[in-house]
Every structure is written in structure tokens, then in C-alpha cells.
Length: 258
Image (tube, rainbow, N blue to C red):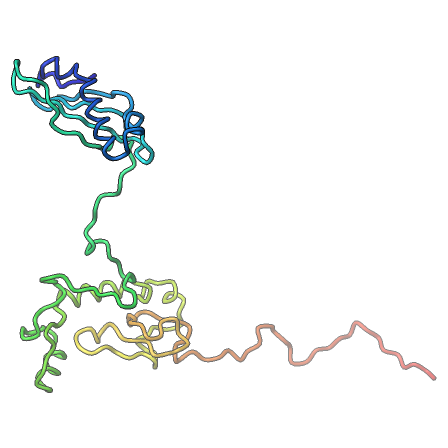
């Protein structure tokens, strides 16, 4: 039995192992029934001082599904002449217990591609990627369209939102550093199937409109490229070198008489 010396609980709290075991068995009986309760409380593992007047006794939990867990029974007394009473009985994980991973809020767990048919994903409150539509969007093309039709979206991309998207697209599979781009004969910026985006992103990004390209319908960096570039010309030369006229002087031909 281990106790924290500096707290120095009374010896009768540390020695009250059987009283703590009985409390653990009673708690187990409420959940498992009286026949299985006694077998659910295993060996006494340690006594941990919680305060000068409280000690927690730990017992191995031996019921199925709780490997490595412990019954923790906290005993306390109000003074030297006061009785020892049970304050709390709980199951707690031990150092080797199988426990669930730390909780991560859903907004931190969701990843691109997780959204399925019928799913709803609201933008976080005060999302830095968006600004109210009545605020200058810092994108002349957006402001021009809104003024032209007399309407506007409630929210528009902020500068932070556009920069974040541009960084993600440039570093993604349709960016200039991808394997496909490095092997391409020419970049998307010179391709006839390249549809430039409007607004401030026009100078660097567009959408591929070639149905035979692996990036068809996707946003591509101007430095991206693939083998379906509009300027690709078929190679009409033979891969095998062939001479214009072949002489075979290794065979003598003689007429065959009748």
C-alpha cells in the first residue's frame, strides 16, 4: 500500500482495506448483480492519500471489458473520534487501461472530402475566410458585379480566405510542383482549354475544360499541365530508323532451269 507521506492520513484510513472492498462489491452488485459482484473486484493495488482526512483504495477491476481499470473507493473521516465513511466509489482507468482517444470537437475532426449527400456543414461563426457582403471585399471583380446588378451576396471571400484557397490549390495535386505538371509538355496557362477565374485569382488560376484531362472541371494553377495540352501535336515519325533504300548483297540468286 502506498500513501503520500506529506498528507499523513490516519492509519485507520489506510488499513480499512476490507471496508473499501465491501463498498466496491456493493457498487458492482448494483450493476452486475449479486452473484457476479464479488468476482468483479480483484486484488488491492494501492492506497492513495487524497488529503489528511481521506484515502482512496484501488482494486483491480476483473469484470469483462474492463482490463486495466480499477475500482476506486474513497474513505474519509472527520476526526480522530469520527467513524470512517465511504465518500465515493467509481471505476477509473489504470495506466494500462484501454480508453477512448481524447475528444476532438467535430469542427476540428472534419476533413476535406468528408461531406456526403445530404450532409450540412455550416461555416464557423466569425470565419476569417468570409466577410459581410456590404464590406468592401477587396476584390474589384466581386464589387463590380454586385454594383452592376444592384444585389450582393451576404458573405464574400475575405483576403485571408482567398490567400488560403490559393495556397491550398497551388500546393495541391493540380499545382506546378505535382508529378503530372513536371512531365507535361507545356503549362495550363498557354492551353486553349484553360478557363481563367474571375477576380483577383485570375492571374494564377483557372478551370480545366478538357474532358480528357485528369483535371477536367477542377481548379488548376497556371503552372500545372498535362499531356492533353491543346498545343500537343501527334508524332508522325517512325520510332524505328528505316533507310530509304535497302540493298541486300548477302544472297546470290540464280535462275532455276526447267
